[in-house]
Image (tube, rainbow, N blue to C red):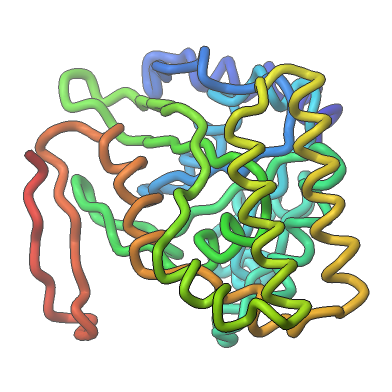
Length: 282
């Protein structure tokens, strides 16, 4: 993406700086200058991916970014802009008719090991203004499988002038969970148990590595260790790609939510798509 991004970015930047969109970015200093890392963002409109791409300039002038995108976009069901971005930049396709995202996670690991970036809208679809929907498990499962940091981003329209705002948080990795260690004890004598424990160790190590050029190359090597092992099918995919827990989902969601304005709300589905309960932000 990087060379295409370099060529097209000036046109996006002109639009972003126009009076109509008036894009502003806070937290740009948190963006590493190179991958690998995973970007998670809320989703409000078709402009979100462009706003995020402009905000992530420090990384995207050196690294390709691969967005997860539903296959409906390629079919033109989300408008011409989405179709054009799919064709120009390339994506990691998500078939919403399938609950298993193992193929997307495998592709993501492939790109992360090359020092590139992966971008995910974990809500899966656009949300209403001032609402943050529950996150789907795909990105949490990816974050558990890859010893790569996660960069939280929030995008929204400012009330005062209607312009676009992008807030970028600090890199993080998922914390270890008690239930995870209980599961590892059960699998202690099995190859998959030992390997999952090694991945957890790599993730904790990656959290301490400086996020400069040398450090990010080291993290890419950690991801390569994981992908090489998984590609040999030494462990079942359905186990390794479903390690995330509900707490992981909420942990990632909270990192995005804290970047949104104080009057935003979390929307909980509670298993009933039409029955919404609202959690007000403190």
